[in-house]
Length: 196
Image 1 (cartoon, rainbow, N blue to C red):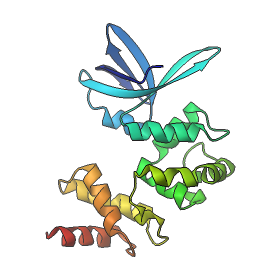
Image 2 (image 1 turned 180 degrees about the vertical axis):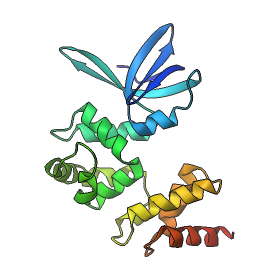
Image 3 (image 1 turned 45 degrees about the horizontal axis):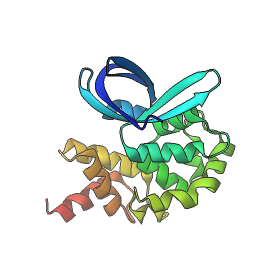
Image 4 (image 1 turned 120 degrees about the horizontal axis):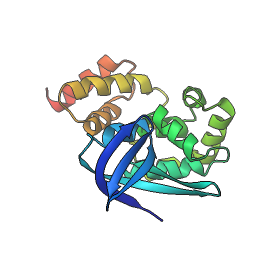
């Protein structure tokens, strides 16, 4: 079992990267999120991996964070979702939003992910809704029905443009989103609470 690879990022293409370590280049299938997070070519990187063993060969799937790999493992535990399908789901939505959608049983939002049909989305909710919340990636504000995921996404973009990191922006947006319907209101609430 290959748990992770540390090495030089020598190639980045849509859906995959090549990491060279010990003179060997490993082709690794990744989500769009990981593709962005891994940084620039010729830089050192660390990729957490999942090795798929099949009769016709071996495939490596990679993740920039342990959290993403953990969600991937949960996704492939759902019948009808294989490793490539799980990567497609992780590419179609941020991890935090995916967890919010699963725990709040938002089948409509999940079905909007390319390649994820309504029936598979429903199965995903049924099989994972009790498994995602204990992982603790997302503050449980998301359980409230009046939290608008798209407004949070817009607020995160604004906050990152103001100099906050993605993680800080997401955390603060979710923390202040309760009862607010627009990205503008969420950003105002964040700035007010920060004393800006």
